[in-house]
Amino acid sequence: MAPEDAPVDATADRTLALLWRHKLPEPTGSRGPKQKTTVDAVVASGIALADDEGLETFSMRKVADRLGIGVMSVYTYVPGREELIGLMIDQATGEKPHPALEGNLPARLEIVAHHLWDEYGRHPWLLQVDTSRPWLGPNIADRYEWELSAVEGSGISDIEMDQVVTLIAGFVASAARSARDAKRTAERSGLSDEAWWAINAPLLERVMDGADYPISGRVGQASGEAYNAASNPQLAFRFGLARVIDGIVSFVEASPAHDSGDPRSA
Amino acid sequence: MAPEDAPVDATADRTLALLWRHKLPEPTGSRGPKQKTTVDAVVASGIALADDEGLETFSMRKVADRLGIGVMSVYTYVPGREELIGLMIDQATGEKPHPALEGNLPARLEIVAHHLWDEYGRHPWLLQVDTSRPWLGPNIADRYEWELSAVEGSGISDIEMDQVVTLIAGFVASAARSARDAKRTAERSGLSDEAWWAINAPLLERVMDGADYPISGRVGQASGEAYNAASNPQLAFRFGLARVIDGIVSFVEASPAHDSGDPRSA
DNA sequence: TCCTTTTGCGTACAGTGTACGAAGTTCGGG
DNA sequence: CCCGAACTTCGTACACTGTACGCAAAAGGA
Image (cartoon, rainbow over all chains, first blue to last red; front, side):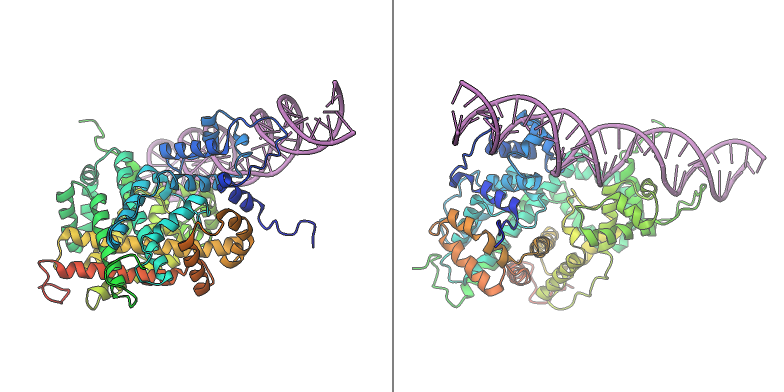
């Protein structure tokens, strides 16, 4: 009954409109001076910055500098930092088209996982966002639909489909995080894992004195010899993915509605 | 040959010494005034703060305030913010003793996973740290040894043991992240998922106009009806864990050195 | 007692996100 | 044609961050 009754969260509405901006009629109430740039350019600039530096040093001022505009001008395109990152996520998600999902269930899940893995490789900052839940933009929506289509018709329930997709996506994020961390540790310190260990070994050996860590000691040594590093993220990804897909496939096959082999239902 | 030849990274050495402080002889070159508090108190204060507020608003000044000391005094106990968080991680990791690992392999992996899950529940900020690799402290080392002991003797190689443990830990972190995000979304906006959807539905429906998302639409509706929310993190955890453990167990059973059932080797 | 070491901490600086308001630009309506 | 309304741009300002620096006070060893 109030004159304006449901602006529950104005910036949420505005952000949603920005996310879907390409499918929405332009507001075109343009009265003032022409805008120097566009929302797309701001988002692209943000992505470029995050690609270069990561999110910990990501700042609105740097985004503005890259565009050659003042800091506060950015706020005429985008409500704030958090929302900009939300737009960047959706944009990055839509960067590469989703590959066709062919073959049986494990093959399809492999395709999904590798697509996500590659995406994290291109945009490692996606792993740094600490957001409650990403904004529901068009590319996020397409992504979810695509992921679900990989398990569609396999005979499991809708809820189980969601859980399978969540499991795969979570696994890939986790593996990609390890990969990024390993890379960054090496780059930041300028030291290989081996060199780092050699330097800190005196103190650590004094303190861990041998007998207390029989298994870790053995396993750590094996890893070191096999990889010349503490871990091999690429292999860990492949290993983990194989196990996860295995677990999913045997669940699907044990499912009551499972119709003998073909991943597509009638 | 230089007077001081290997202070490759002085604060790294200092941090390592701080991590292992309880197993190291005290430096005791104490000449100045008595310290007002202790490293343990600083770390505990940091953990309390992070438990209360999370890491995004975590600040050295707040830690100092909780201790009733000046900001810069914190720096006489701890080299800096990042290192303090490293100490907090190790401390939190050692908070609860590791439960005994009994039963067969899947049972043991369940125990490990639930222990980690509970820990993330007590200290959600552990999921927010964006560190290259956690500092190798005593409790982190114990944790790794304990995790490995869950798969020790199952007949797989040392490297595979490491990969299995990495897989489990990564999965739990990923599931816990979903749980934390869901909780925070609900708390922050004060809206249930249902209410949020109801409010934003007009715009979203206008833009997603029905036919484009056949599977997501169906699945989303099923989730909504089953959970009254977009997802159920607890169930997703259980479902995913079952699949992951399944995949691991079948791998172990297919392993050439697998000796019929008993998870412990001679 | 005096000197050296160490703690505590006030101040300062470079950085952050963003609220506010002034100035300039464009268009619609009269 | 012209003027006011609407809009963009962006300088300034504020509250906040981590932490470098230096000074004062405290304590132990000589």
